[in-house]
Image (cartoon, rainbow, N blue to C red; front, side, top):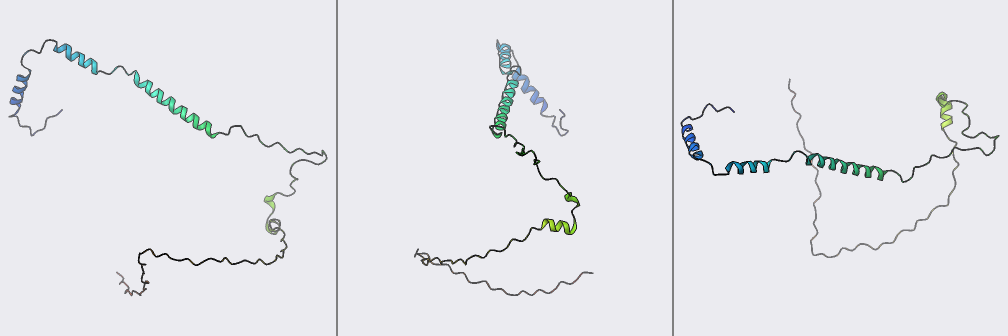
Length: 166
């Protein structure tokens, strides 16, 4: 530790003398034994408890993660759908064969293939809607005066253009 340069050396002799007076004489009998007992009592045991605490917290975190993971899985695995099997061996199973790849269909042929045939319109009887008869809403007298707000008035604000700086 470095000492500051602006230290006042006049106080050092007084401090030294005060410390000599405080430690002058012999300590009480058994003083060394009492000091050693306090030092041993305050010394922590070898780091035995700390690793066990860390291991216990890690095990608890792993158990919580495992429970969360298992609770998100379905109870039974979902079986994939069974493949379609043709009941008549002369009819092949599966989708029909592709005669022309979709990537080669372009231009008007693609537009014709993508446009479905128009559906004819169906004539329907007109629907008559009966009006709903409601009683007009009555305002109850609450004793509080209604607040009337004056309508906003829009006025033009003319601002002269700024001069350009050259």
